[in-house]
Length: 69
Image (cartoon, rainbow, N blue to C red; front, side, top):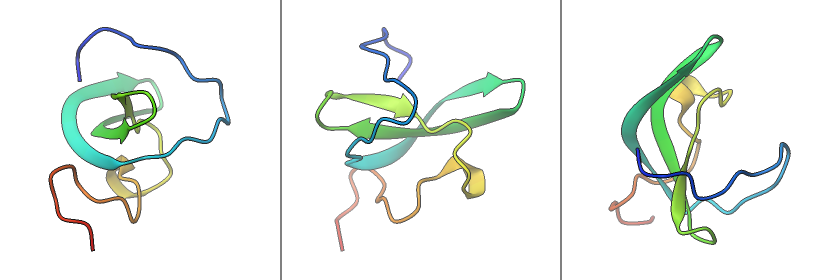
C-alpha cells in the first residue's frame, strides 16, 4: 500500500478479495478510509474507500495474516 499503481479496474467489476488490512489513509471529498483489500488475481491491494459498510471494512473478509474460519 502506498506503492505504484498496478492497474485500474472499471466500475462495477467483480473481484475476488483474499483478505483485508489497514494501511495508508486515502481520502476524497465524500469519504476517507484506511482499509485495503488484497486481490489475489492482481497480486496487489485496492482501497476499500467509500464501501457502504462500517469503517469501510468488507464484511466477512478476514484480516490478512489471520487464520480463516
